[in-house]
Image (cartoon, rainbow, N blue to C red; front, side, top):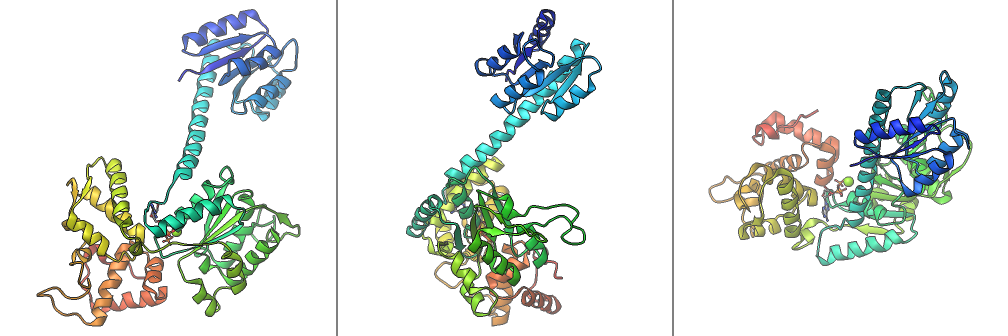
Length: 466
Ligand SMILES: Nc1ncnc2c1ncn2[C@@H]1O[C@H](COP(=O)(O)OP(=O)(O)OP(=O)(O)O)[C@@H](O)[C@H]1O
Ligand SMILES: [Mg+2]
């Protein structure tokens, strides 16, 4: 990339020497003698870097600098100040200059300053490139799936993202793509240029979650040294994603409800109402109706949230999408790991479709990542699949195979629990949710298995139980 450098200086001699040295360094250079010509060059020359003498005949250097920034806020400006004028240098830096040189300077100094400015240009260009690429790729994110159920989901996402719905509820088992849907909703809406903020409601204690959501005023509590803006405020004009909303503590639920009703909130310890325009997307993999019955979730909040609701079907109800997704992930990971797995054997296709996928798309994705990484075959074969998936499709996968001992019900449960633990890399919160037991209950059960030595655990299957 060739950087364009604009020189604005009224001394002919300086212009000539800068042109010569910078051109020989590989920059494209344009020199102007007045502030006005310098500002004009912003549209015809479009420089990345400007070297600006603060003492110009026709205008104040600061005014010119302001006009340059008005035309391109990412311009890197190196100012030249008169000998001993520290104050001007400080003012210039505060006004956004990236560097300053005092007269008299030598050419070596100028070259170094321009080089470092060029590094800033490329860093900023990269950042905005990634920002845009990020947005662009999300805008195009289609949830992969041709099944009628996913067709409905995709159509709904398009409709909701363009609507002015301010609350959306996404429900679905673990790993069905709730987070992906939340992002798609944001990036396909006209909120896309504004923040997408997310918070996992199960990973904070009550007071901390409130603080995270609504922020606090300086001195609101011991340790609140400064003002902190919360996510509700920070996501203004954008989207706030409340993941695992079913785990939100009761008092936070009522504060959230009040916010949804009024579109305004107070920071913790604050008196002033702050109004924001955000869309709240809440996700849950517990059935909220059940949580309402037990009193763990507020009914009125549920009704507010579910005005627009998107239900993600489990993978086992998506028919041939399993194969479509498998091929997709195979491609993704083949590219990533420089492998060439491209096909799926007929037998494997049947096994993939027969398996119930308790961990849904995440489980399928993890499986393909592992297989593509470990195997060098161009075809995905049945032998690449984990043991439980290889059992013949038409028989219950937990029934004993020929020659295998018959297990007690409890032993079957133990094995299943360990399979699910493995699926979630030992994450007990997730595993317990899928298994439909409390986290504490799961821990007790694991402890018991450890005590009785059942089922025999392989090394990678023995999770820390604590
Ligand atoms: N339809 C899909 N097409 C492509 N990738 C998908 C699809 N659905 C899910 N994924 C991928 O599967 C993984 C799990 O999805 P995601 O994290 O959105 O699930 P989730 O429902 O939020 O799970 P959890 O309840 O455990 O938080 C992600 O890597 C996601 O990109
Ligand atoms: Mg999630």
